Amino acid sequence: MGPGGRRQGGSGRCVSPECGGVRAGVRAAPARPVAVIVLSAEFVKSAADARGWPPAGPPEFAFCGRSNVGKSSALNALAARKSLARVSRTPGRTRLINFFDLRVAEKTRSGGRGAEQHVVFADLPGYGFASGPREERETWRPMIEEYLTRRGPLRTLVVIVDGELGAQASDIEMVRWAETLGRSVVVAATKLDRLSRNRRGQQLDRVAGELAVPKVIGFSAREHFGVEELWKELLQESS
Image 1 (cartoon, rainbow, N blue to C red):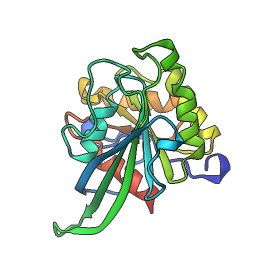
Image 2 (cartoon, rainbow, N blue to C red; image 1 turned 60 degrees about the vertical axis):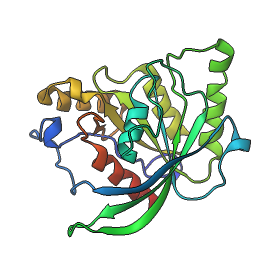
Image 3 (cartoon, rainbow, N blue to C red; image 1 turned 45 degrees about the horizontal axis):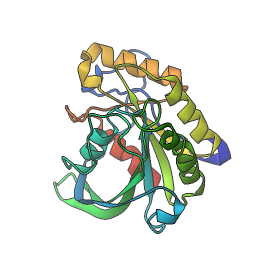
């Protein structure tokens, strides 16, 4: 349980074959990942503060991470779209909170689809290194703090870290800050496709230890692993 009695979202070992399999002493995944059909995904609006946020509605999931960590690619993979979120080669290009509306359904074993679910993704500005005027960078923390403390529909903060590089000081600060605010946190590690399968599991253990979280989801937009596992975490939080 997290601060305020909230359940802390998982973020731990990836035990899928893509991440190197299960090693001795590591608990296997409790259930198969959720296969999700994305029925629609569209950009809603950008906002700098509460005055510009969309009206409170369906369960909302916010995504944050260091600039250029692969956050936009992760969002596009979850939405099954190539360019829902802009992928930039220049770190720090996301300077507002971008909101996206998604309608999804779980895929049934027979190949059909279950009940439709409506969720919102919020893409937060990257932290850590950013390109832009100092005055602009200094507005980001108040912007994110206002969102985390005041956004009613927010269910979970998904912290994206660089799985190849490992957790940085800014990642640790972000996780601790969110926990202090009583927010449920899920951690996903990207860029694991750059590592051998044997090293992926080792890196996920390392990141989980650095962030002091029980679980980290291994994720690769390029190889498309971790997508269903992350969706499973989000849909559990939305129920």
